[in-house]
Length: 214
Picture (cartoon, rainbow, N blue to C red):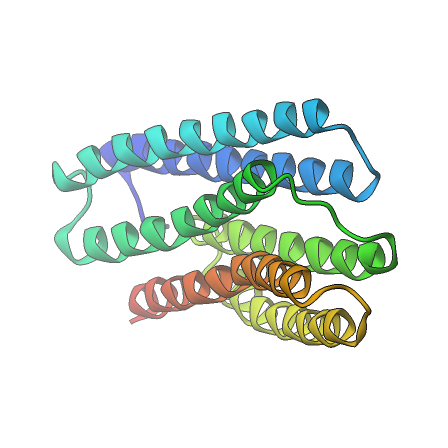
C-alpha cells in the first residue's frame, strides 16, 4: 500500500476523485452518443452541462487533494509523484469537457456516413481513459496489476490512433466542402487526444509503481 495510518483520508479522496473523472467520461460518452443519434440542440446542451458539472466536481476534489498533499499528508518522495499523476489524470476530464463544449458552441453535427467511425473512436478513447482510472485505483492495492493496466493503455491508445487515421482519411475522401472537412478533422483529433492524455498519465502510474517496488 502507498498510504497508511493518517494518510487513509487521502487515499479515500483519491478514489472519490477517480469516480468523478469516470462520471465525466460517462457524461462525455452520453453527449457524443446523443449527437451521433441526431439529438436536438437543446438535448445536446443539457448533456454538455452535465459533463461540465462532472468535470467541475472532479476539479474541486483535485484541488482539495492538492491542499492535503502540499500539507504533507504524504511522505515527500510520494507527494510529488501523486500530484503529477493527478494533474495528468485531470487533463483527461478537461479534454472530454472541451470536446463537448466545442460541439455545442459550433453546433457541430456528424455526417451520417461518418457516424460509425466517430462512434468507434469515442468508444475506444473511453476504454483507454477508464483503463487509466483502473490503473490509478490499483496502485492502492496491487502494484503488479497497476503496471498491467498501464501497459494495456498503450495498446488501447494505439488502436484509437488507427481509428483516428482511418476516420481522417474517410473525411478527406468525402465530397464535403474543404472547410467542413477541416472542422471534422479537428474534432476527430480533439477526441483522439483524450486517449493520448490517458497514455501520458499511464507513465505516471508506472513511475509510482516502480518506485514503490524499490
